[in-house]
Image (cartoon, rainbow, N blue to C red; front, side):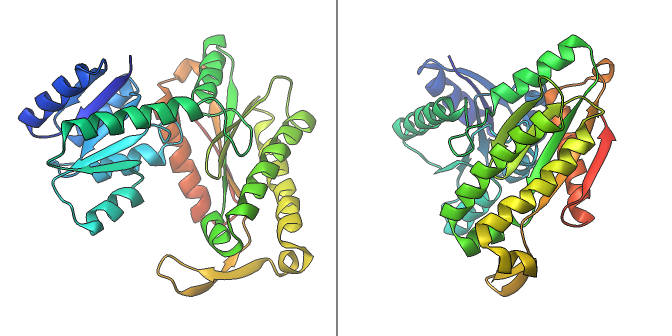
Length: 306
């Protein structure tokens, strides 16, 4: 049985969707707005989050952005329901991180079919990232929960590749897949040489990676990972481009711009199990520390307690 969370400010719509999806064998929780959806996520993580686009106080877009910005909730699939059918609304939803989009009014059979397809995809891809071969999703959470249960201090290194979207747009996704695969190999090698026994390497998705290690090993591991990633990029683009340290690509508005070559920024979370709150809290702290690291410039590594 899958657990679904549905947020909509219309009580009739909530009851209709609940009845429809419960008849398909799902457990469905209902909340009336975006703030309540985020509070419910703190209590229990759903297998699928269904959001109405327009809600008071906090829209479905706002909720989706926050969920997808948190590395420990980003993998939750989001289905956006809305009364608006304009292409601009769809684009806005996808840019916020929504995985699928269904305009109201909808055929109940289509909602059932989309929910079933999204849950099937999540189950198929949850165990291991197909590009890097590294564990992801639930495996990462289980590793962190195990460390917390041991009541021993540890660190979570949240590594993110800088300027990778522009890099992918310019050099192509085939080369980018190779870079991601090589990065997975680099992280495994770094934890073996610089980390400690039993270190865990995971791939959240896209260009986001996780290393769980001892708190005194975290910054050396992050630094060595960044150094070795420069070798990966050099192999990918060649010595000439690597020596230049930058490339010309197009920004989000389509204008030509010079970008620095992809590098690694890292947020290092030092976790004290005695102060543990939740996986969602850890993810929010990681996202904020990563944001601050990127604001200081590409390649920054910041550490902070949780």
